[in-house]
Length: 215
View (cartoon, rainbow, N blue to C red):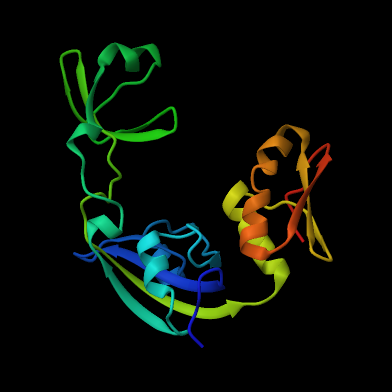
């Protein structure tokens, strides 16, 4: 049966630049090329909900379970390189942070990642483009299964939204999510997301310390 939007699937994948360089994977033999110490993790997401690269999302919608090689041009992958994302930052800014910029160095500017291109006098030219911007990429994707278990679906959404595991319980048509008080207002923002994707209500339960172990 063809997969539809809002279906949850588990995939194995490897993403590489068209010239063959791997940049992302959850397959052990490919992942070790990026980080020998890394351990692959399952990737579960809901189709059409922005939980994976949009170009892959769009391609897999309507497909059957199986293996696919997907070539994406920049506009369907990580976007074109934008000249306006190449900016000058005064050298004194770096010195105020007690860091020494050099070509190739990567820094975090209030959540925006940039790579230093050149350092000349008091001027540092940095590139805020995604490192993969402007590149055609190829994804080898193996759809392992369609997910029907509600616990797996809820856990995948929690990991996507909060980047961590949180305890939760499912009762009738409701998900009760345990979060620390400081996170509760943030969590409230996703009630419509749970309703839209899963058809369930989201109830926030404040606790002292949210567990790292989800059910």
